[in-house]
Length: 172
Image (cartoon, rainbow, N blue to C red; front, side):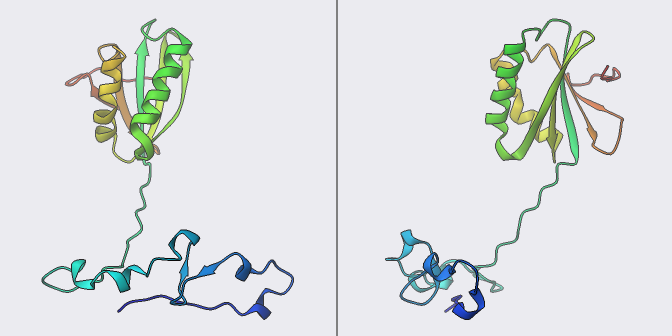
């Protein structure tokens, strides 16, 4: 059986708010939130064998932290007046934020010199564009957009939409 418990010495908290008044412990002496006071810890209620592989053993309670770095900037560029209405651009940004969630960060926009750009930080530009494509299609601007990406540390863009495009991508 695997359990985790600890204790707090009240003398260590001199001059500070006592954590013992805030932190709750269940009947097994382990830390829990107040919603779980009536529930036994998972290790006591579920057999460990349900979570370990059949071959090779392993730990059911090890969680590797997921660290995703946003190493790329994906840019959606609209030429001319295809997205001239400021409210339409903001609405598109809001839809992209909702669709992409935590997988990417819609990082702002700029307009001028006959173009509008929406900037997105991402760890995988191709996957992010694939997730954004239905939003662009619904808003009927998929044919008007050029999508390109670069590593944040670079100035060289690679165009990924329209497919097969060989034109240079420049932000003016």
